[in-house]
Image: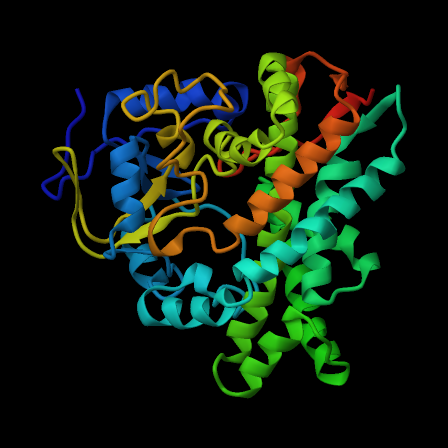
Length: 408
């Protein structure tokens, strides 16, 4: 029988094994969701609370007392939440000062500075560019023989668009894609440190390049904000890193979406019969295969009440949009991929003040890429059986490593 200390923390912590998440993530998360509102586990030597039920996840994501800034709170976290000393990644100083890692006024200030870039007018201008790019990439791919759609299509779509927005030369795209993937999916500390170090160094070089050669691009506009004392140097560099990494993320949805449609041919037939459904299909893709199994850990600055369970102040949280988006209390038949589903309220792009700022751009990239792909090659088939799909390792991201297909 599980016992708890007087402060409400279990004497014995559970665990979520990587191999279980890789083998069958949704069954693993469902088991937690059905058992308890909050599951105290050891993760990377820290005590964390896994939150998996839809209403609890939604509440935790929007609660202003649940904080993102683990750098600001690192001393309290390290003194209270460490349960076992383990090797951990050491990241460059100042690489986590963007709005992604901030709270309150600092979060609002920095997000507002970046947010005016993603206006409806600017996004509408990007749609035809994404379509042209998708067709250009498809023109280069072999037909009737195996090709890795993740490497040859999904990643170049996202990589090209974000490089163009930032004013980054095309030949830097491969480095960006490789470093981004290692940073957020590698389970190996040395690979994470190397990837973050490369991105940090590249972001610093990007700032220097834009000082010497300013352009009509997002990097230059952000640099001007720094020069006007609206963001610090660390905030500028961290924001560059955030936009580079976040800008690659639609590649996950493009790959996951192609895989979902190819493994559900009836649903593919529906979107081909009514191409307008491709836009709606994106929300179902990020509900069904949420890019984040867990969002990066957050921190309780006050007790958090979840359906009769109280998580004390000063605790780390592992919040699972993937589990919430498969919660049968919120979505009927949640394990069914249905492009006509009403996905209102899904948490695939997060929730609350930290909801993904680039979600609309991601939707445009994903819907346009999938529509272009399948309208040109409606009889495309997977090379391998679905159960042999290769997913990137890690507890946090749900991303295909490769997607071998035959275009036809």
